[in-house]
Length: 219
Image (cartoon, rainbow, N blue to C red; front, side):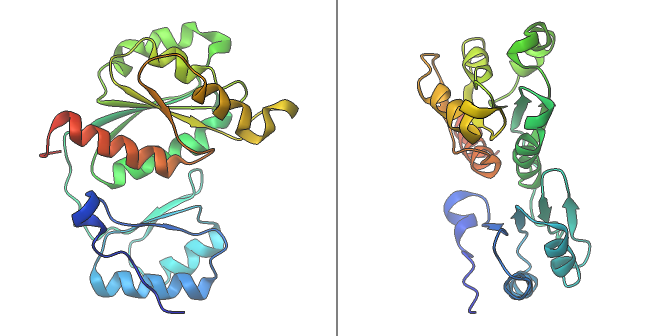
């Protein structure tokens, strides 16, 4: 296999390519790792399992991996910190893996991820307890499964862009996240957009791009 990493993505988008690991063989990932080492390109890996982590970490020194989010990343130290802050909110504790995928990617690319987990509409008072802190963020990501109601609620209460992150959590008619996605797409709450089901990486990169527009090029 010939590895064709998108080496110019940093210049075009402000962040490097994120390697999606599902269905990639150890051989493919080792070839990717070798190219990353040659270029010293700080790179994140998503949907990485323990075996894949071992394969990449055997080549890349000080490789970091989080089993909850299944995100791994290099530590070459080429990414500078910036002033952008993204609030990452989850409706329930079962939504945390998707939320953590977003939070880890945000932090990898130099921004701050402020976590507010398990504050769903079934106990709406939990949201109000942390709402003043959420309002301080440049962008807000809200992960929710089941009926997917929380992003609409949050979007109606904050001035910043809210990115809905539907998760494949819930019984029967929740349809592995389809109901949550439809709820977010049908919302009349202003300033709410949605990414694909369980796509924490997409939510994070969209949030980073939006924060850069809001806060200026220095972030």
